[in-house]
Image (cartoon, rainbow, N blue to C red):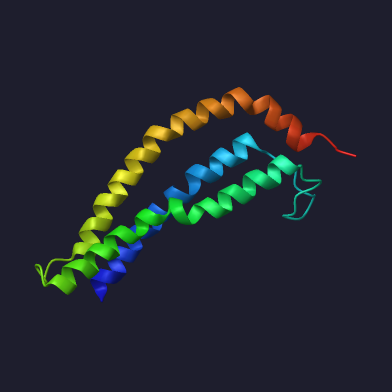
Length: 130
């Protein structure tokens, strides 16, 4: 339906924001050098591998809020509560506002962490390892 499509379009930026927070944090805490002209890491340290692995394993849990709005729509449909109400779209809009507010609040903390670690990051991504 068009309302389902609209809810999906609203959920895209919510998924992006939920994905960006932990990925930004990992890139600040465990930076690594990329091989020239590729997207492959060069001589990855074990802590980098562990950080990326933990992030990838935990991402399904972090984007779990994306399932709340469709779940509410299914619940409302199965129970017969207000069948004309676009619960998925309304819940998605509300959750997008909540996720955007959380992102807005957490981003300055990540910025301060980046500022404290910028020399370490610069050294890590520019220094040639042998």
